[in-house]
Length: 435
Image (cartoon, rainbow, N blue to C red):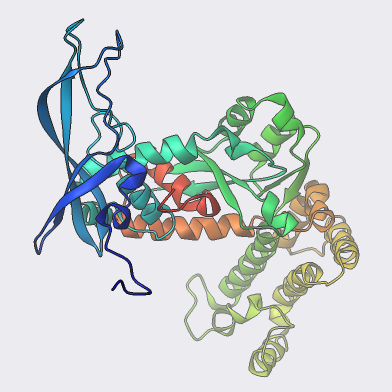
């Protein structure tokens, strides 16, 4: 009597061979791998030239790496026939295009499994090669080619982009060779609250020409759809965006604006410290001991940190540090305002103050005021375009640090770009091992 819940085992369905046009006819298991004997489910003995029925000539065996079962490498041993037409002498073999690409060593299901492991599970190529039972080079070439075909070269990948972010990235830490690349990220989903940031492209080099050339390659309709470009303080990116995307709003990222204030504060602290304690300060110097506390937002500081700052600022010689510190705190507070219009007004007022009247003896604050005044429109544009911050871009940079750790570094920039796009390209909703 059949079991009311379980059915007869079906090796073909269990190993997903039905989607490849194959039928399992046998198996051989060992501790190191599983081999599944297969044949073509629907043979086609008709001549592709004259349409006559062919005569079986011989049988060929093809071995394909398949998606592993329980992390045991699985090999498809496909027995398929060759036919000869008695009428026109044409010779052909059974069609295996559903199972694998021509001259491919990995089945389509195996490639889908490998690509999902690389993109969704962040596996190394070495781990994927081990699961498939193939060499590293075989796995790397096949998976990157499939990733480019299915995901990277997808023409719809650039559709719907409204908010761009551009940044520089260090792809390798070596003394020789160009180590910088320019990265372009789609922040549209972040601004709309529908998903994460998505890496669009990575280009060798970092300059105005690099970003401008990338934008020039896009069609005019796509460029007209870009509403916002978020960037850091590099003038080259701003100039390129202004020339290629004249209708887009340029937004200077809050992180880099606050970093300018932090640098001014740190520069003032170091200068006063040298004036008071000589060219080489000691670890017990009050200013050096407070270097981290000075950059903490006052609303987040604990009582111990507040007390340390109060004691520090009782020293008259440290008054320049206190003045720059107060400006830094006002910058941080403006970005933390719950109402954008309040934050915009507070930061605009601050920029007008330090951009026109700075007390003598504060060169760091004067440089800060000049920079903020020059980029005032870009800075204040952030409050009108919430969600256009480069924060998600910096988060993707962290993902790439993890990628380099998994791969133990990269030597080939083309491979690094492909792996980076697959790692951070936002393909997860579309990719599934069984697709």
